[in-house]
Image 1 (cartoon, rainbow, N blue to C red):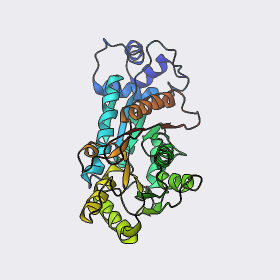
Image 2 (image 1 turned 120 degrees about the horizontal axis):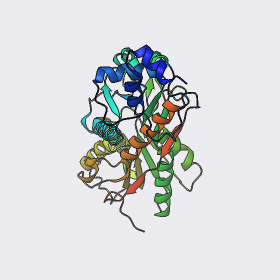
Image 3 (image 1 turned 180 degrees about the horizontal axis):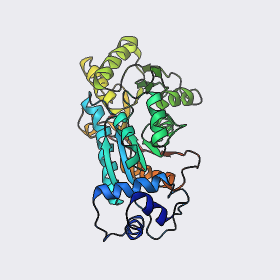
Image 4 (image 1 turned 60 degrees about the vertical axis):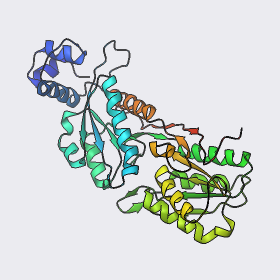
Length: 337
């Protein structure tokens, strides 16, 4: 492990200044440029490689936030915008320095100024870019999704368990014809990745007392696609609709409800609906959506803690954490318990 004197000699600052910074002296007053220089040298010399959490005043590293969300769909972007804001809020609580990057190439260029990063979204990001990012800034944690689990850690909502829980609740309420409406998963280098919700629905319904489990999966997670999928459901089975639907996101649910309303299909009279995300809009559509809440504050806090651990132990195996969701009952599937 690098010593204070070695860091001081290479950075050009006094051992006293380096020591006070790396021991998190709250009374130290230095410029951002000085702080970044010392932190960069400490990172290059492997100062954190063998640091232990038992330190009374652990260093608070500079971290970056890579935000790669398209922003084309307002309701879809709302979820990721909220997640970004929660991460910034939690880093502030932890006393960490954070800088937001919307370009992966810009983050790569500035990598020496940071000891790690948190990623949100992967819109128009290639595998080669992620490999290059890992070469320049290997300490990374993705929140919500992870495009390259072999390279970076992640904290994600437990969508598999969410789907299983929804199916079990519907069966308990004596619904046995259950449909699934979802979008396609992450695309990386034009290769479509499977969506966890779709996989879980297919596998779990095959093991449970579900007599019919039609799936309607296509396109992006936005309102327009939800509307098109809703119309497809109606075209294929208006005379015999599923008794219940699990819809992969609130944004899709908004579009599905529009299509159903136009066709005179009333929720929950004709079918019940369970959605996922519990976004703000879930409370205000007609009928209000029963939806699984994804606790973004917990996702954010765990991402920060995981990144801090990775900075201290950069050679450890990659870790992927799952955070459980909880159901919020509203009129689209009322609580009958």
